[in-house]
Length: 275
Length: 149
Image (cartoon, rainbow over all chains, first blue to last red; front, side, top):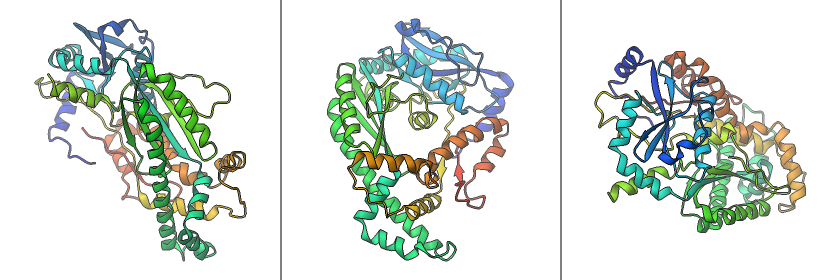
């Protein structure tokens, strides 16, 4: 998904460099009562010496730290720091609105302005997410297991494999691509089936779900669930049961409780529909 | 937060692995432009998207390689957990590793080396990661990261 850069992007960057070498990295928005959570000493995005702090506005607070604006964000440390701060706050059980990775606002005053402008919507979204946390299930096929299943189920694929097995690589380049494409599609179909089964087992225990499949990896699927705190134990048990059933064939990993990365946009949209 | 799995659990409960984080957070979360960029004149809001795209041909070639290397003389019945598990664990160390796990490795490599250290020069970074701009290598799939704004 490519979008043309805004025409003034270069000008903005130059302006930022000139005027404000330090910006305000914004992680997310929490209820003001969350400002007692100890996140001060977690590593800050792009700034190992920075402190995590809060900018309060009535019953809201933005989670922020100073960030140098003269370089792009996105190192592994940046990503880890971002997720760690948000997930630490989410783990307290209080609601949180995670902002997209890379959100930098000019200064504290502007952040306060943002909280003022969006106050009612932010409050409504936090209320919607109160008592819920995100859990994400990552399912990955064991490589050999899935390939064996494909060859067993698809005579056409195993026949093509036999045909080109002993050909030199250069002579069979196009067949190799064809073989790989057929296998990739078959694996991708299996992934969809797996996703549907996970969905069927876990969705009844969740308030909302999303599915995302990395387009470049046919063996993996991520499903996110918005789980009510009171349903958490049942949800985790159901995931464990699935993992046991698929042991050796599909590897299941459960991440969470997490900040509601996949559900915050919906929570905000709902609050905008009903002001 | 990590919750330690009880021993004997089949469900993994990892925390903080970069591969998980990348999948979780890229392109997720609330975009606040509407609250700040538009309504606040003169306020800078920078939202940086880091994306990794792996060319599909490379993926296909890795699948072909993996399925070609598969030893069909082993005749495990799917559903016998012990045997399959052995195959899987052996497979993780074998030459076919790169085939299906390569993509996440690429993501990791790019994040480890591509974004960050080399980022003083934006232009250099983009050139380096442009997929069509360089010959394909099967072990190092061409990748691209788009950064907006």
